[in-house]
Image (cartoon, rainbow, N blue to C red; front, side, top):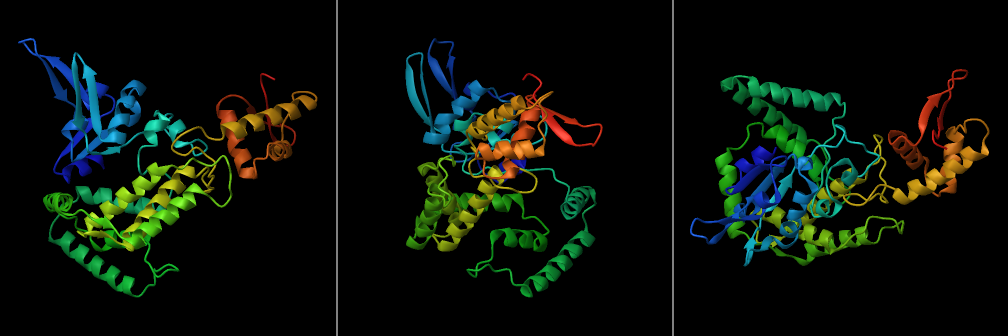
Length: 389
């Protein structure tokens, strides 16, 4: 995916996180044979007005990741070393890909806890998407078919097949009503339909020229209707309906991200103004990103009190929950077995609000070795014990 992004951008840099350093990403100093000191540009400076793709971002050392903070916030790289004080432009978009720590993504933890990444750096990304390898028959069939098509010999038969499929999808689309309550077709519905009808990918040179033209000649301005949509969604994030004081902090950084994405959406259509439909698509995209970040289990439960891209997942709730479990275990004789009823009692005393959160917390405690999950040999019931209590 990152390699494909570098192929459709006129100026792009691809680096690997396991071999990248702070000086390699920003700037470095070099001493010439004449004794003069020179500045050598790093990946972010070389990708100015372009895209910098960083793969294996989780393999990068924390000290090297801190060098990206200024570039992602101020769009420049400053250096003050060996008597040289300078600021170099780094106006580039950063696309990063990272793998979870233990090989699989744990929905009970936040993104920052799953990845080897600092929370301040992760919060600077406008969008965060989580790719989960879940068993889905229809999705797996599509993926396997696309992989097999890569190894098939492309010829006239493949072209004719694509054309027939596109026509069928067109007629099927005309007979369906995909609009929502406001009469708008959601982007989550439009994109699969476009992928089905446009089987043959566009040439990379054409896409590269199109993007370069849009970046050069399109500078869209915000319309009042689009601004009202973005402002309404920002206020919804800023002041949620549940008024939970532990909700994720929302700052003007999220509003600036909405504005940037809306302008990029208008540029993709070569428009001089950001319309309401551009803002609606961006809000839908941001809602999906927020939903994926805050999902806590495989059933799709959303917990807005999680730290999301930053912070820790339920640290305060886990501390209170563990304290209640230890109190209940001390009151019991023997090994202090904790059954399902005891877990729900502790969850109610800790004011967690729902049972799913208690299940997530007890599983996280089990993974960290705080409690041990065992099964009664007599009746087969499951219980938990504190080994160090």
